[in-house]
Amino acid sequence: MFTRRFSLVSISAVICFVLLAAEGVSAGSFLNWWHNLMQSQRNTHIIARAQQDVGVNVQQSCKEWVRTVVRSASGNTVTIPPNSSNDTRWQSHSYCHRYAPPVSMANFRVGYIIQMRWRNQNGVSNPHTAIILSRTSSGMDWIESNWQGDQTVRIRHVSFSQFNQAVGSNYSVYKIE
Image 1 (cartoon, rainbow, N blue to C red):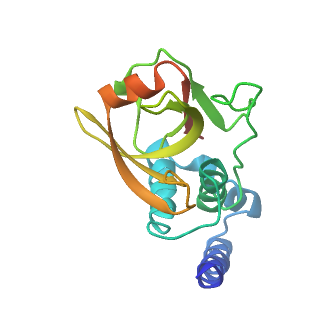
Image 2: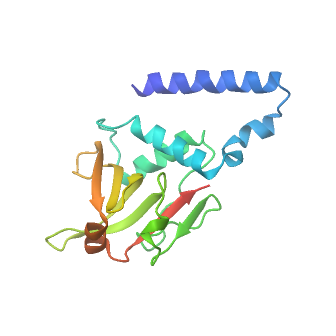
């Protein structure tokens, strides 16, 4: 499946490059296509790429899978940086804008990424990374890998009250620019 996706992406990239070259678009402009998109378009690319893996065992932890999704969606333009010493925060990067708590949940947007420390009902706390797939007035749908410990990508609904109880202020929200 990865080979098929890779070959389709490669073919699409070559076709786009040829078409842009025929239109007189410079190679530099082509390579910066990601940064010329509106934020909503970048978010849409991230979501579309993430949805390709729903139900697939991707053999990656949550953060590594999100890194793969962002790198692929951006045409290798953006790579999510490693975590800082705090596992709810990434090292600084010019293309990853961080919203630190307390940030209003109204600012959580589809396509944004949450890096958090999730505390389960037994009090065990683990780092986790998820992409916001959709929002309602009461919560969010996430697309994530490895939530059940099996490296499979799934969609899960998390209510705002559940998020507050399990995460509190141990999170960062990222917009990929």
